[in-house]
Image: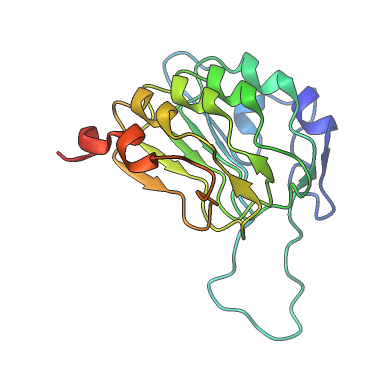
Length: 177
């Protein structure tokens, strides 16, 4: 619930997130059948398969990302793509979500430096932070070395111009399987 209070949700996508209701029944939340712990958050803005002119499009989530998210220590999947977190950086505490295997922040409006703490996510298989038009940048890609299980990396439109010798530093040989 702390996570929800810092978000702006004009379309009411999180309206099922009610204190008296089991969080495993909330929209966008998937829990483990065995442990009952939250393992997935699907909070991307839905994109209609067919866009009809005049239809109201669902508004993106915006606001701040609460530090309470780091309490979800068993979280494996986090998708915040296609939202509008304009003006805020990717939270560095995402690097403490060590169970993550999938992280999609593409086209979510994040700005600033990509936090090197993402390199702590050694279980990560998919990292998508692309599509944010030149609002994200990196000055060093050495943190990618920590992503030893990475299978898919999307950093399209991330500004790499200040990363010196980034191809050498990244040592992406672990991506070749």
